[in-house]
Image (cartoon, one colour):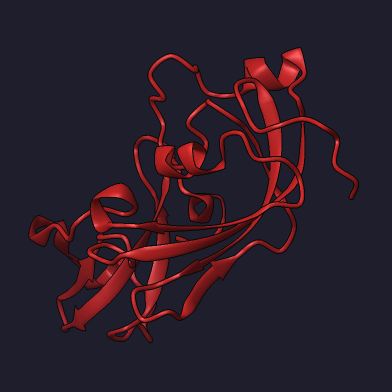
Length: 170
């Protein structure tokens, strides 16, 4: 795609292809198609926004984030015991399930242990406590339409901080 002449900045729509790598360098997520985000509206991690600001289409960028900048530190209180009847009969340690939070976000539940009465799950993000690497490619940059700006998150506080992986597997 030819360079539009626009640079990533406030009120632009940025089409990004990405791959996410864990601390061991294994790819854990990648875009199937470019992800469109309205820049400055907290639709991706703020560190990624800072890293791509001023770039134009065709540019590749590698961003490495510490746990605090990406998916956070592991929270030992994020382990829960849930009634066995809430899971399929064949549930086993290592299984993963997706669930929606009260806020409407999707989280991954990883099964740690299964007994006759309960299932122990870990609600920490699978990449918690890890330094992660994002390989990004800016596919296109263009001005956002008024409708896209209205549909985006409020720009003043970046209330919602989502990673690209939040739009796909977590």
